[in-house]
Image 1: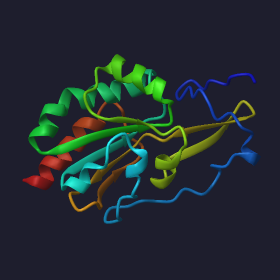
Image 2 (image 1 turned 60 degrees about the horizontal axis):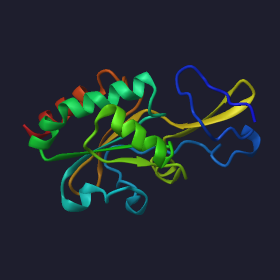
Image 3 (image 1 turned 135 degrees about the horizontal axis):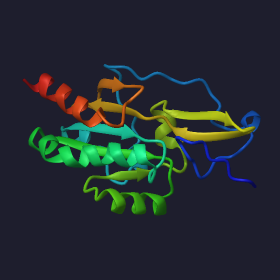
Image 4 (image 1 turned 60 degrees about the vertical axis):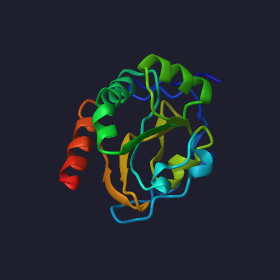
Length: 179
């Protein structure tokens, strides 16, 4: 099968024709106040909200592309500030575990990142996207961020995320909430 590589997302899998693709469902919308989906058994580490901490859960389309690298490095650079505020960081994409290990090394990340190759987490959070590209269906996790409060509810949901500014915006939002 010919690989199709769109210029931004460059997915490496899920090139199944859209008519038969299992993820061609309407997007569910998770909004502030909703209970965060229970996806603990799919994450590499249990959701920190179970431990009564704030959690930033961000989704990115594909590791090892410039935008995802930039976004993750921004989070890593601000991690000491998130730590001071008792906020846990967790990143998710539909990349394989092997791809995630490479991405973690490339970005020198010291917070959990999870392979959602089975699309369970992305589907639960409503960020799984399938689009036509050159006649093929391409599936990826949309770049979105969720702030989960210590009680396991969505405090804020960012869509149309700018990978350059997302980490700083989320950090400022948390500082404002905790002020």
